[in-house]
Image (tube, rainbow, N blue to C red; front, side, top):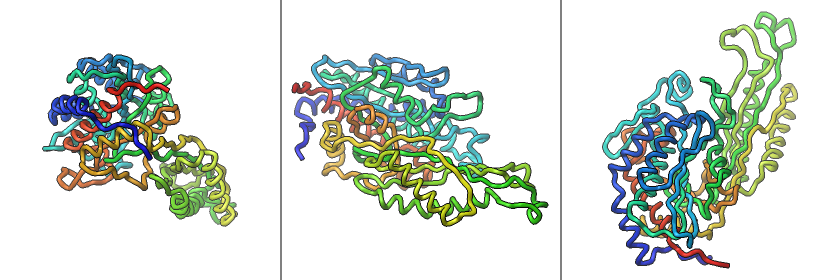
Length: 442
């Protein structure tokens, strides 16, 4: 495969070095702390978007606060080139998966909120702790710092550098508490809105976790399974018909948990290994242990290969459920697919992928090594599905010198500023490679 010319020439290298000198750990720390200290659960990013808009405006970009509704907004900005080159969108989401409120998060995240689960930053040496400090806010800080450095270095761009900091990037629907009414607050809604409003580019580079360049990733399908039973009383179990929806749901869950690895094995190829989970179970009245409910509801997240459509996945899930009910004819259930975001891919030889790889290789001094076996979905799927060739790159996991051991929440909520610095340099490198070249003509 022949790569486009994305290696920096002498002039581009000089521009990159001038911008790199403006990237400091202190500034990155300041940006991360500022972002963490403004709570931004999915659907409620407006205040943070306003802060980011002001920050980008002070850096010399043409910045705009993009209203979605009274609680949700994006921050978007443009550093204009002379019009002779191609435009690059640097993108990161800004919402957090959990909310940082013990009344909502506990006990589901654990017995209490740790320091890294709260929307209040703590600086500990090279690390910053706080809700979303790494994913997504550390990555968003790297995008902002890269744009600031390029703007302040006065690099003569040919194409525009566009910055998108989007609401609603997490795989969640809107909260049902505190008067929130919009169901579709997550799942890439902010990214989709941004593109619909004309913030377009020739290429997109999204900052999300993983210190490697990715050109494809999984999608996701959500399924709601409704297991039926009999509403009855413990004192009548032996006297009346008895079908316990909760017990039958347990049988279904056990069968699905054994099926998920088989599904993953069939669809593991390229960079992805799509996984599945049962995420929640709802049934009965906790206050009323004496009765069984007539319904138990199960939610499933099934990740999808970019080479499978949601219709393909729905049929495969249907076959799995049919096998479960055939093996257990006493179980009565029905189900629906309630959400679908297709997995996507960009050709590996696309200019944005090549530019990101070249930037990665400059940073580490060896040929690029992709991360395989991934099952995380991001707004890259929204960007690609709308027609933007998109690459993804992010920070490595926290190491043994971090103030907390690595687990899922610390991976989201603890950022190593040294990693953020490396990512920012890499974003600057890729942006200069793409935005300072003359646009090719057919």
